[in-house]
Image (cartoon, rainbow, N blue to C red; front, side):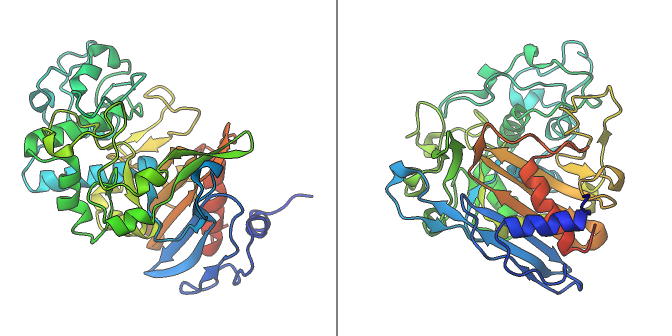
Length: 405
């Protein structure tokens, strides 16, 4: 028997503990509520169209799943902050663009100056590498084995011409997390402010968000309500990051041998990896919805400036089919939601898969996340574009809520 996409979505909702589905959102302001808790980690998918929530399913647990915690389980809510993985990059992009608009930086000049070192592709020495190239992963740079350095280290120790393994800067696409450490270093060098201060001043603060990178700038109360991220390993839940000690702390989280580093001693522009610009944003689903709406308010972010043609970049098994100015920009013909332009970002790290999206044709926003996924992970949904199996399932639910089949 062959099931339709809509029938598959209905079976999915039932499998996830759905207790009520209202006619697949037959009107724009109808609301689907799927409120039976998921059996493992946190799970959420929220869809807003024309300012109204048409799907609101958040369930599962934010903490207490690893036996070593000795803590009671806490529910995962739409207000629960979590490490947003690569969805964090959206905030860095928006901050850089706001700084450019304010005259603090130029997206299209050679970054060697603010970096204090020459950053040129050895095969294209006459082509300057710009912040625009860096943010859109068109720098020609590949990730080194380790793309961050110790809190009191210098990012320049990570960088060399050996990183330039791709094609011509500006043309060749290769997704690399180290690009965002470089971008943060440039932004700090030009402004004299740390990444957390810049993102608060230009994006998070103006949007009214209690969010921040590696918990910097996040209120104690919100931090205490945060989600621990887990992986299922050999049938047991194992903490990956933001365990009880991190959530109950007061200083930003730093990775490496100097976890007690005093951020007040940090010199902006020395180590842009300090606060994990590539993935360290702590934000909730409610926060991500506001950021997704902000993407809709910036139409200059809505055009893909790179589309894979078979030889102009690293597609990573058809995951990267197109890209925009620091964001995934899926034209309608390449979109995970067929026929719909999608702007936003996927995120995957520490057992979490998620995404935040704006759909301009429908004036809709989608945010989705699932934590505590198994190790090894499930195979990706083949696509194209290929995306995490968990994300594909939640996007199917979002499509049903928007009456898309």
